[in-house]
Length: 161
Image (cartoon, rainbow, N blue to C red; front, side):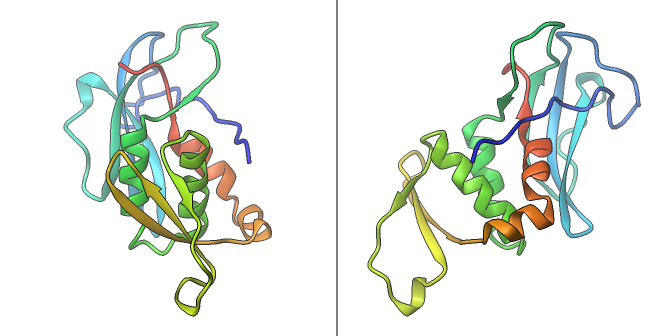
């Protein structure tokens, strides 16, 4: 599934000030009220990742006329995948794992079917030398929960700073 990825917030989550084109800022994924939300913070206001952060990265706000969006760095996405392991947000975790397969960070492992792995997929990551077991989620559930939009809003990053 290709996701349409959105740009970061136009204003700093801390000060409310608008970002200037090319300005360095930090994005963080924070677990709040049972959900994961993205916060974009200007570099001068950044005090480090807030509590409940599951990932963070540094970016530059896009210049006017900049070519399309990109995803956050692979290590940030892997950190988010690992953090969601305990969170119970299976639809978001499943879509994130598929996005990492699409980017060739993860690979789906073929396993013989048995009772212990029914309804799950195993993904392997060469970079971290580990496997991830992720519960498969029906496409209707993903659409109903708005997971595609949540994933896109959380994980867009400007040019790596």
